[in-house]
Length: 241
Image (tube, rainbow, N blue to C red):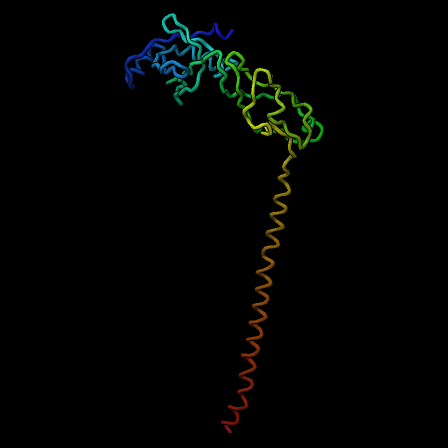
């Protein structure tokens, strides 16, 4: 089915912002086709056809044919630039594909089902990694990996090596132990203020002790200061006599 997806392309001789603007006004977008044994070619491709591929189920991993005046070359979307304001495509990079050569691609991971660790144990389900890298032939690129996580218990993880991957056709390049999703205990935010209050209550205790100590020291010094004049008073009396 992928071979039926065709993107019209036309050679582009001139470059620059003005040329790119003119192309976009005619419903086309500047592109570069490269990779494989062929040389890099600057093209103008149909913007709607490329946009439809990006919005499709297989997305950027969609294998399609670039129509170069009747000659078809298999390719995939390697990179693209979108206007942040209008959302229109500004430029695309097309990677030429050799159907008999294995290639590296990123494949999204989608989970379904409610984990037992959430339903029964009150945990929280978190997705850690949303895509993995694999190596396979262009015709074997999967749209996605779907994983049922209903059996995932509290404290348990879904790892990359547990994906339903066809080992005959695909090789996992992402670390096998990479955590894709897990069920963790709910973070009790109520305890934090209590601990904070306890810490705040405990913190002033030291200054109070210090203050008391200072007062005691000051009291002793004051007592000594008061004692000295008392001792000096008889001397003054003797002088008067």
